[in-house]
Image 1 (cartoon, protein in one colour):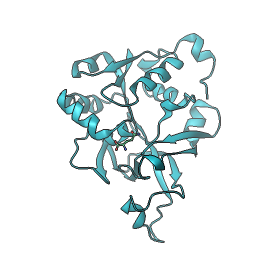
Image 2: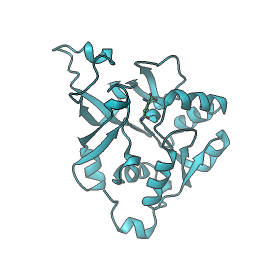
Image 3: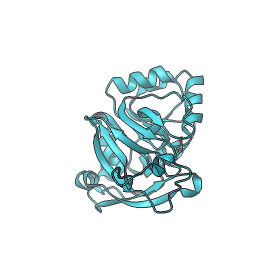
Image 4: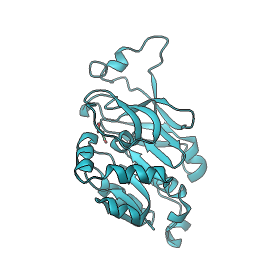
Length: 235
Ligand code: GLN
């Protein structure tokens, strides 16, 4: 079975291209019934309010929630992470509908506005252990969320130091930071059972290890061709 990529808005084409690079067939998902033909799903980055409005318009929320509940692998990147969080806070989080399932609180636009977007070299021991390659991953953060709290069943895969050019005016959570509450590092990648979530955009880099890692969460997704699996993923 192919991997579904929610294709309402955002960087779905880039995810499809990243899947192709590792020899995996991805299909665009725009309707609830299309979810029946895929064994796992990627929810891309973009703009979560817009994506939520479109998902509502197409009556996708019940099917997406069902998909998550069934234990099928789901990976949310950036806006996709917001979609999967049980709770979202932060600016402009005006009652937008969420799919939920991931036991965490996410803060939208945590690092500031578009011009505070940044790249960071993230140590990700789990990724290096399972996929090989360098111990860190070059992560692209675009108006990214951060994970402020996680439940007991959530495994933290990566955290990032809040960059010094952080926009504290924009983000009251950072202003509130005191000596006791360490806001200098925040969680940006987690795994909880069948759910993977990253605040950054692995589909925008040529390092395919997150996509390969996600594929391993679903044995039935092993459609990586012999040719591509014999040469290790590019990074
Ligand atoms: N800031 C966006 C939102 O809240 C997410 C940004 C992204 O997906 N790159 O939806």
